[in-house]
Length: 115
Length: 115
Image 1: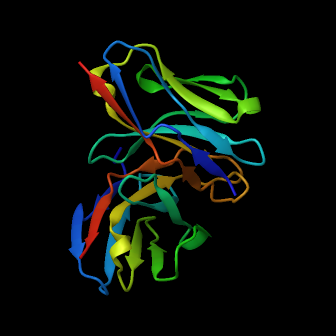
Image 2: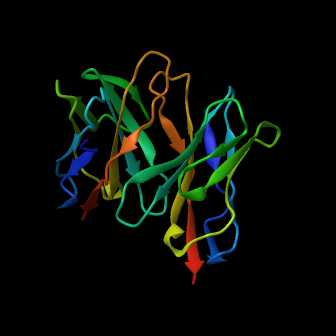
C-alpha cells in the first residue's frame, strides 16, 4: 500500500525567505503526486501535480516541486514566501492501480509566516 | 460554474446517533469521493461513488455508507456514531473516464462533533 511522509509538522519562515517543504512517498509503480494547500476553515486547493515527464513542475501561487525517483521525494519549494502563504500543506499520492485514483495524504506541514 | 458544496457546515451529535452529510458535485463531474480528516491529520479516503455505485473503499467499517444520486450529488451516512468520528468530512468531485486521471475538486467540508 502506498504511503506519504511529511517529516516536518510545523515550519516558521520570515516573509520574503525561501521555503522548502519535504515529502517522501512509498509506492510501487510510477506515482501520481500532488501538493494541496488548506487554509483554516477551507477545503483543499490543488497547488500542483506530477504524473510524468519533466521532474520539475510549476504550480499556482509561485510554487514548484521536484520529483526525485531515487529519493522517493517530491519536495515543494517557493523562492519568496508571502504572509498569505500561511496555511497547512499536504502532499498526496494517487493510487493509479485502484481504478478510483484514491488519494493518500501525508499528515501535513503547518506553515507560519513571520512578517 | 458552481464548485463543490457541502451541507451542513457544522454538526453536533451524540454517541450512538446517526448522521447524514451531503455533497453537491461540480457541474459535469460524475464521481464523488469522501474523505475524513481528523484533527491534526491528513484526509483519509472513505469511499468513492461513480455512476451511483461504490467504486473503491478505504479502511472504514460498514457503518460508514454512501449514496450517489442521478444528478451525481452524494450523501455520506454514519450509523452508531463514536467519539472518534469527530472530524472534518471532505467531499471531492471529479470526472472518471477510463484510465485517465482527472483532478479532484474539494468542497469546504462538514465539521462533525460527536459528544
